[in-house]
Image 1 (cartoon, rainbow, N blue to C red):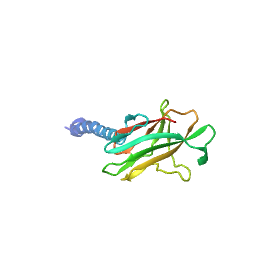
Image 2: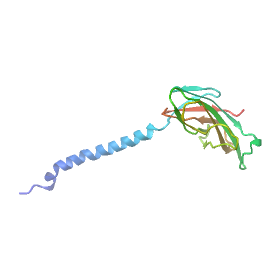
Image 3: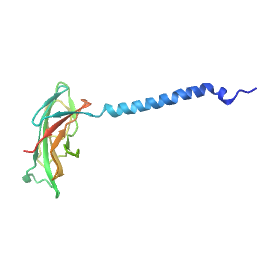
Amino acid sequence: MRRSWWRRNAIALIALAVLVPVTGGAIAWQEWRTYYEFRHWQHLPVAAGASIELDGVDIGPASIVEVPAELDVDVPPGARALAAQVTVVPGDEPLSCARPLLVERGTGRSWEGSWGPLGWEGEVSCYEATEPVFLNLLYLVPEDAGPFELEVAILGSEPVLPTFVVELP
């Protein structure tokens, strides 16, 4: 007499019942770990004009100014040009930093900075820097935007993201 299909495949069915949820859990764990491992999710607020030390790296102070008209920046109607500056001083180890993000405090709107006009001094990011870096970025924002904060991401300092309050003079 032949055994039923269920009895013949009992070991395989039990293995399947165990391995499918375990595999799904392992995949989900890997995705969540990867997602949060390289994300700055803990904002560290820094007061206007202040500096901080983060993992041996001195950051700040950060400032923002309106770009003077004589620099000949092409600004579309309804917008204004702002320049944000911050100094990053590496510690014992070389550091890399992402391009700072200008964020409007009230709404969360954000802008990525770019190179300034010809003759503009400073960098927009840093890679394996061992000397102090002066970040100086140009932002084109709507006329009604503000007040702002500047997010300066130091790579490798995850999950902490220094967020500098910057005020126009």
